[in-house]
Length: 101
Image (cartoon, rainbow, N blue to C red; front, side, top):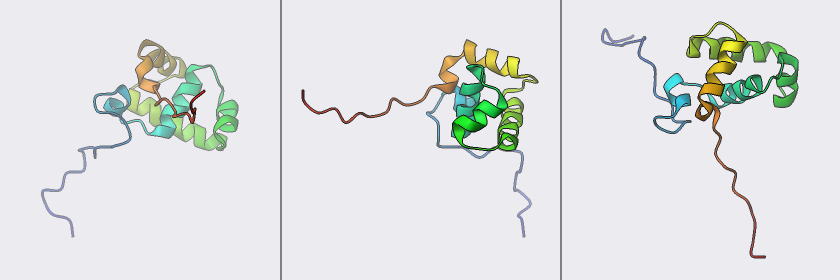
């Protein structure tokens, strides 16, 4: 049984993005950030699906979620949002295993 003071409209905090980052403000998942990155680079749904090894219906689902979270209606608006704020899709720099030369 739920308590009367349970609030369903408050988002749960995510810990997959750095505090204060654009992705955290919009609560984009890591996968949504990947989809958004490819979208901004001009990839279509089939190309995004192939690049990420997912189905086109999954891509559409991610895009619907991205559009809702960014409060946009079109791919162009989403891409424009990313291009105006590149930190939205910033990824961590991978560690290299470079030893002494």
